[in-house]
Amino acid sequence: MRNIVSIQSTVLNDKVGNHAARSILSDKGYNIYEIPTVILTSHKAVKGTLQINNNSLNPWVIFNKVRKTYKLSLNDLTIIGYTPNSKISKSIGKIINVQNRIVLDPVMGDIGIGLYVEKDVANFFKKVITKVKYISANFFEWSYLNNKDVKNYSISEIITDLKSFTRKFNSQVLIRSIPKNKKILNIICNKREIFVIETPYINFKERFHGAGDQSTALYAHYIYKKNTTREILENVTNDIYDILLKNKIRSKKRKKRFKAKSLNNL
Image (cartoon, rainbow, N blue to C red):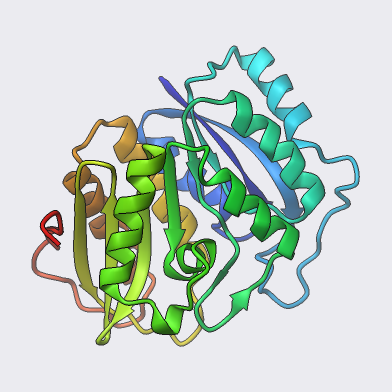
């Protein structure tokens, strides 16, 4: 079986972070090795959530112990997500320096909420996005990392920035949940090609937690399967859309798969 290391929040009672990764990947033929960056009873946004004492939590130490115990490879795909503070970010930075295949989800904030991590953590993500092979970020996070305002960040600018970034750093970037005319766009780009896909907007009465974490887990899965760039975008988008529909009361089953379009000529 293939190995995936998941270095994210460990949330005991919500399908986010490491729990989200395991829920997506465990039935797809992977051994999942979890390393917590923080331990919570519920998602941070849930009132009354309890953070379990993390004074001794050191992902770098845990990573080395897990790697030795289970004989993991430095080439095993490694998801890095929510990082609660600068102390943990320094530990995560050491892992990024040695692990070869990182899928970075720079969990920092969202549209309508803003930045919900320390500025030191946000600045850490700005530095390490240039060091990793794969990035999965929502629109707010990508905008923040590029010093852009989500309200004034046009699609043409996004495309230009993505092409420039991926060519310079030889990486692949998946941008999720770009709002446009009551639709949602996802874009994937690497140094050779760029694609966009459009889905209807699903309106939840309460914010749905974990969609980004589950999308990133799916992204890792389709990278491992060696899908083409277009296939990765289509498969991640269609899979997560189905997950969202299942969690939406009175949702209608869609009739066809969403297809990606090339933006190579723009």
